[in-house]
Image (cartoon, rainbow, N blue to C red; front, side, top):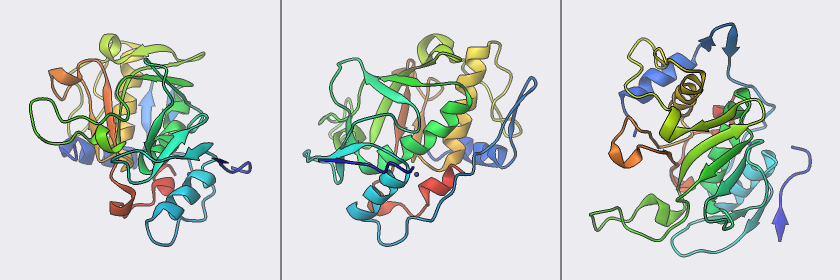
Length: 234
């Protein structure tokens, strides 16, 4: 059964920096990026499956309710998320926890500012442990997605492996001084993701060698969230 509205929603020092920066705007050349303010009536009610589905519908997400081991509120994504189409290297249906789908749908508004229309990912839902440990990966709960490439007719192709510029940003300037336009966009996205509160954890090539070629985007379980994720995109 398909659902969706036709009317059309590592906490580190870097996250604090990004949040402060997002209170204003991003300046790049003559372009200025600001937070977008959509009409929003509020999620309301307890943080259960029903309220998460309502958030998806308010955001215009096409989805199918499914069941998967380990995922609290499993959904199969049946369309774009906030204007961004997600494509996996393995060409399997994208199944995630509803909480992460809500965050990605809202984050699509940030990506649209950069002309991004598509995102290519590797790991999504996988029942596996964190490498070298006995601890379950957040991928095992459908709460994490590893994105390698962002692309669009206006943005071109932005490869995290090839275009991300490491070691940039400080307390005063989250973005820093990237040398390329692609590096600038990827750094802007990093700061927007960190400052939005949509994700519990954003790991990049700056984090460690294991993330040299992708962004790891991870959301909290819906039942643990106290934020209004739709309002976070305002």
